[in-house]
Length: 156
Length: 156
DNA sequence: ACATGGGTGTTACTTTATAACACTCCGCCG
DNA sequence: CGGCGGAGTGTTATAAAGTAACACCCATGT
Ligand SMILES: [Zn+2]
Ligand SMILES: [Zn+2]
Ligand SMILES: [Zn+2]
Ligand SMILES: [Zn+2]
Image 1 (cartoon, each protein chain N blue to C red):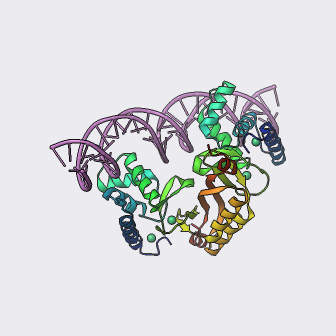
Image 2: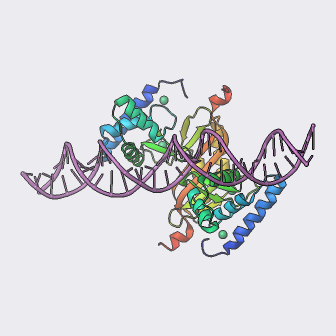
Image 3: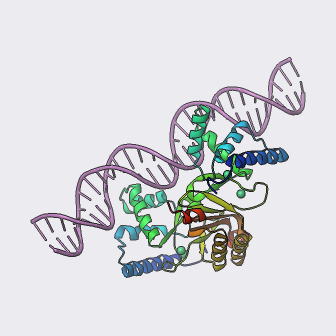
């Protein structure tokens, strides 16, 4: 997944879909928010808010404050364009914005990649387990740490 | 679950099991670590490290440093006596230490209770989804936010 | 023109977590 | 006995992550 694909494509795609979705919803994808989204998508690895902030400062010359980034991220998460990885305090672009899904991630400890999956089996199992206990699900979080395929095959 | 049971029992039980497990493993459950475990178990709600720190200071009069608590928590997590809830930056006592399990939680947004479950279906679904993608699972995290049964029945 | 509201900038601050280093206790070996 | 070594703890300082309060700008609608 890492170096083996044309990632500029991923970024362009993500931005295009974001434009379309926000237009459709009447949400305002401002220049700043769009730029933050682009920076989140700079790789498939989750990035911390402060890393994005640094990018913003260095690449754009503007010394932004943390709040600037957090506010943009908040918007992007609300719109389902970005997911927050709780176990890393970091953010990653959503692979399928627009679709209803809850965000399930396979996070590689070696390369840091976070592959988003939307496995119906996992979702169903969680719903069943919750229902059995009378628990009403609002926001499931599934973050599996481990080793991705390519990191198993090419150990460091 | 909340006010409807003899929680002193939960605490005593947890400490007894911890004593036994650590003895069995040759791990040193020192006075400090045991005290922190007791404080984590003061409820079924996840507690932050700094909340525990405050308890330590107020109840025991010792003004401890954050590291003191973090080190104790690290030990307790390693021994599987306590779980960390990533989405809350908080810690909660393990319901079944000793057993091999990964920690799945139903966290109530209203009362804050975190019910630990060890649902085989969820575990199996995650294993299957990972296997399908060649991903090697090391540490699954499942934290479901929502409303517990009693909070649905007695809305605030 | 003016009020309104969302987005952004700025400053200061809180909460969460870790680094570096000294000290103590205790079993063990010489 | 005496000193060694390693685990646990104490102390101080610092890093990383996240939020509050308030002012300003600017597009939109009246
Ligand atoms: Zn890509
Ligand atoms: Zn997604
Ligand atoms: Zn209890
Ligand atoms: Zn457990």
